[in-house]
Length: 187
Image (cartoon, rainbow, N blue to C red; front, top):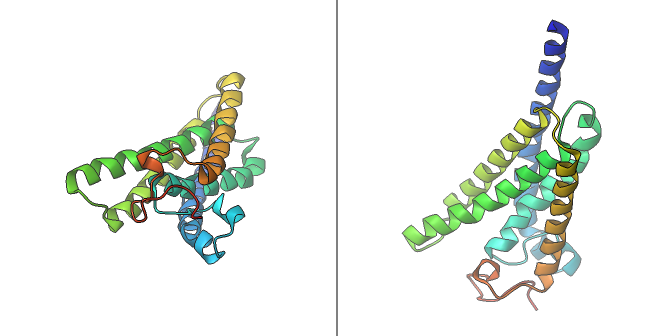
């Protein structure tokens, strides 16, 4: 029994290290993706994975794509030591991208304006909370295989939505660039 507990602690520690590294990775790459569309000269392929305007929706890509990339990086080293991988990563991503608009629309309703420092802090806090929730599920006992399948399907659907809505955004406030008043990739 003591050996199993010791092995679990080592496994949990390695999962924790991966999730901490993932937090830094997502924050750094997400910050870079804020500028890559502009740096590319407006390349539409780059735009599918970068923020193409200042809308809330486009800023959610800054969490999604780096988190997805890190998920692919950590899958092989963690597949045997972590549980619920697809579920954990999907919950972490969805939680982070839900937190951002909740905080943004809440504080801007009170202040009447966007505040850069709060926006950056919101991004960082959302990534941290997403990674913590991911860690909790990765170190929990195995859950249903159906949850894994459903989770990965939801993750793929979200990726498709990010790409599609870059080029064909619904005319809703979350997709509207507050600076230009336009939607989606600039024409």
